[in-house]
Length: 345
Image 1 (cartoon, rainbow, N blue to C red):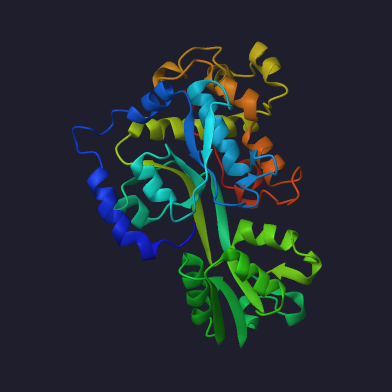
Image 2 (image 1 turned 180 degrees about the vertical axis):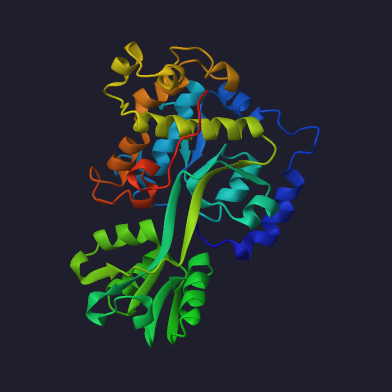
C-alpha cells in the first residue's frame, strides 16, 4: 500500500540474488520450515496501524491482518498461539521476507507490477480491497473533487497515493497544492488542525482516521474513487505450495461466511453438513488436508479459532470495533461486494 519507489532499485538487486532458480521452484520449503520451527513468523507494524495491526498496553496484537496471521498459523500448525508477530515498517517488510526474518507478509500490501516482477515476490488472491479517496473539512463546502480548485491537499511523501491524487486532480483541471509529509501521523495532524483543506489516503485508513478525529462530523470523504488497490498476502517467489495454502486459507474463511458457519456453530455444521462443499471444508469428507500437505481438520481448526471472514472483519474493522467500517466492496458478491470463495471440489 505504501510507496516503495525510493528503495525499489536496491531491494530489487538484493531480491534477485535470492530468487530460487528453476531447479528450486515449487519445492514448498516454507511450510516445511514453519512446521520444523514450530511457529509462524508473520508481520506486525512498527507502532500501531489502526484496524489492521495494533498492539495493546500488554503487548498483545490485534487487527485484521493479525487475525489472518493467526489463521495461517492455525492452518499450518494447528493453533493460533503458534505465531510470532515481527514488528516491521512498510519499508522493512520486503527485505525482511527475502532475508528469512519473516515467513510471510500480511500487512495491507498492494499487489503491484514492480513488486511482482522486480522484488521476487508472489501474491495470494486479494483479501481486501480499498479505494484511494480524498476527504475534506465539510466547512469547505466541497461535494466532489471538482470543487477543490485552489485547495491544499495533505499527502504522504513518496507514496502511490500522492501520485494518484495529483494525477486525478490534474485530469480534472483543478488547481491545487500538495502538502507532503514524511510521516502519516504528521499528515493526519496537519489535516485535522486545519493546515490542509483536504487529505488523500487509502480508503480504510481514511475512514478510521475520520472515526478517530475529535469531531468526526466535521469531515467527510468525497465520492471520487482515485484508484482501487488489492491487498494480498506476499510470499517469496518460487514456493507455489505456500501460495496454494494462502489462497485456500482465504477461501475457507469466505466459504464459512457464505454458509453461515461461525466459530460458535461450527460443530453443529460439522455434525450435520448442509452440502458436499461443507463436508469437504470441515474434513467430514477427506481430501482438503492431504492435497495441501496439511491436517484434514485444518479448515475446521481455523474457523473454530478465528471464525469466518465476516467475524474477522466485524471485530477488527466493523460493528464490533471502534471504527464501525462498512463492508462495502469487501462484502460477498451476493451482498453487493466483490469477495467470493474459490471452488472446493
